[in-house]
Every structure is written in structure tokens, then in C-alpha cells.
Length: 338
Image (cartoon, rainbow, N blue to C red):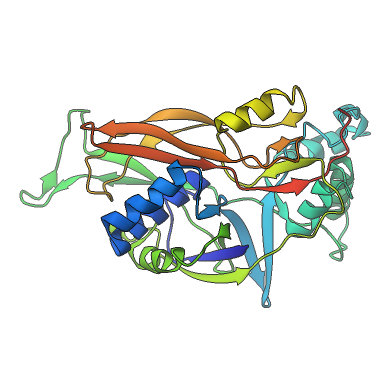
């Protein structure tokens, strides 16, 4: 397994969930290797034999040469022990205020993520550590969490360069808002994991680092530098479940497995929609919305969940648009009563 660290030079249109990331990588591969190589690669994904899997992007920080990776807090209800109620985790009104803030945490550092998914720590334990962190000045052995940068909105107008005036559209105006994410510190960035053959992605990443990723690259957005390292999670002694690190839509085989789990799963659903880009030399078209499992969802099965590509649009009956929802998952152990 490899990790790719992205150091953004400017703002970025979105924080690169796995479907957007894969689409950008495939666009670059098509530009570099040509139509035949691209179609052969796409066929492997459609046939259920992907040469590589990618996770969604998550934040990391770098300080004094040390890289700290942050992963999504597992979705396990309010706690990893469902018989513990939220009311049992707080003892006074002040703690309730802190608990509401605690529930908004999305990403925790790798060490504590591994402790959570191996049941060395529960969510109540993590809340206690959070309380200690914010009520004392002791910096040693505190767990760290991180929030992605907030969206920044910028007002633009559309200019007709020939007549040097604003251009009105059918919607009735030339002004529009654009959104982007800007990291406040150069020591922060995004990373994603790659399982499988990373070689085809190296030229693609070099191409995207110059051209830009995630849209608005014609105005300089999305440019980055990157580093690649080997990556491993701590080996679990035993597992009873799997946790997602990507967006995921079950294949037919997966669906039968998930259906038999009953209530033995914790998950969040996301609606994914949007437009196809102009990067594939096609007219932009709104894609069909799909509902997928989000990162951090937990399924109490030791079988590997595969996922699939989903057809989200078709142009002139000869160009099919696919979104990537293969599951990037790792084993976990939660000791939840079944």
C-alpha cells in the first residue's frame, strides 16, 4: 500500500472524495497514454478487476519533519458500545457543551484511529481525552483532531472580452459565486491511499500537479506538489468488521452480503451528483444522482466488500459517464454485540 501526499499551492475546488479523485486520475491517464490504454483500463474496472484502488483524500499535517495523518472518525452510533447512552458520557452542563463540540469532530490522528478500530479505545474514552485536552495545558500524549478548511466563497462576474462589458445570461445576470478550500498553513495538505499498481498513476499525478485538479484549473486552482511513500496500518490480532476509507456502492454480490447483516452495520449515506467535466472533450452534462455509503461506515463482516462503477450519464448514445464507487476498506474490530 502507498500513500500520496498532496501539497496544494493554491485553492482547490473540493477536497477530493474518491469518485472525484479517480475521475481526475483517469482523465490524466487518457491524456498521457491515449484512447486505447484508457479504454483497456476502464474495461478492467467495469469487469470487476481494478488494477488499483484509491481512498478518498483526508488531511495531514507536517511538523519538524514528522507527518501526522488524520482519518475519519468511525461511524459507530454515539459510541462503540451501543448500550452506553450519551447521557452517561456527561456529568454536568459544561461537559454537555463540550460533548456537542466533540461530536463535530470529523478526523482524528492515525494512532487514535487505529486504537478505535481495534477496540483499544471506545468513543467515551476518546471524549475523556478530549475533555482533558481542552481543560488542561498538558500537551503530552494528547490526541489530536483536525477540521478541513472552511469553504471560501468568491464573487465573480462574466466579462465579454470583445466588447469589454459584463455578459448577461438566460438566468438573468453576470454575477456568480465560486467556492474553494484554502489551507491556512503550508504544513497541511491532503493525502490518499493506493492499493495495487501505482505505476500508471505516477505520470498522471505529475500531469495533474501542473495542470490542476478538481476543477477551475484554467484560473490557476488545484495545482500541487506531491510525495509518495509506503504506508501500513497496525496489524490487528483479530477482526470482526471492515471500515470504509472511500465512497462505496455495493456490487450485486456485496448487496447480498450486506442484506444478511441485518442491523450489524453503522453507516452514513451521501448523495453524489454534479456535472461531467469538459476534460474528456465532451459537452458538460449533469450526471444522475446516486446514493452511496460514506467514508467511516462500518460493516460487521470479514468478507471483502468490492463495490463497482456506476453509470451516471450517457451522451449521444456513444459516450457513457461512470462514477467510481469501489470500496477501499481495512479490517476492524469493535466488539459489538450482534
